[in-house]
Length: 187
Image (cartoon, rainbow, N blue to C red; front, side, top):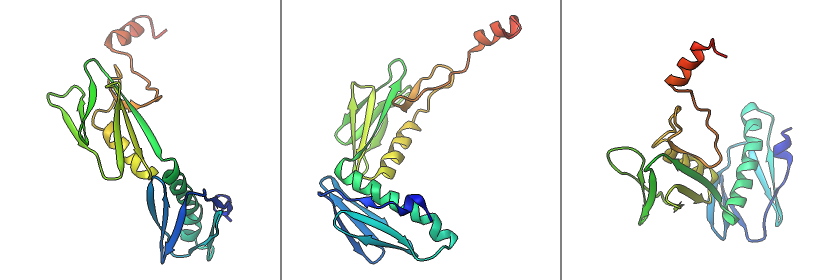
């Protein structure tokens, strides 16, 4: 049996869970998240915890068992605390700003890139070089942060572009460094 699926999901006092056929709705102070429960998976909801049970040992049901438990756990955390991803913009003259609900990026193109804020997501700019993406659904927050990062992927030589806060890039040596290494025999 799935060790992750066996663990009960603890519910915080400010959360409300309701199940209507195959849709579980988790609501809290920050919003609500809906999770589709697949066939073969059932939920035992009490006041303080949710147990995820499976009907049989078919491969598809077994693979969904732990996943559904963690999706419920993420929904509980998201509706009470929320999820945040922070992106940093590196490059001379690169900057970001908000115009209403639209993120405006100046990242080395001949034009400004405008990124509209999707529903259920909050985007903030910090110090004109950081972008903070906040929301209740972990999957959507990660997807939006990835879409913003793909606007200007970091250059592999100078590191200019958009990257996650704390992400470390392995930069390639330039032509001068490569020639110097070849002249000394690669030492």
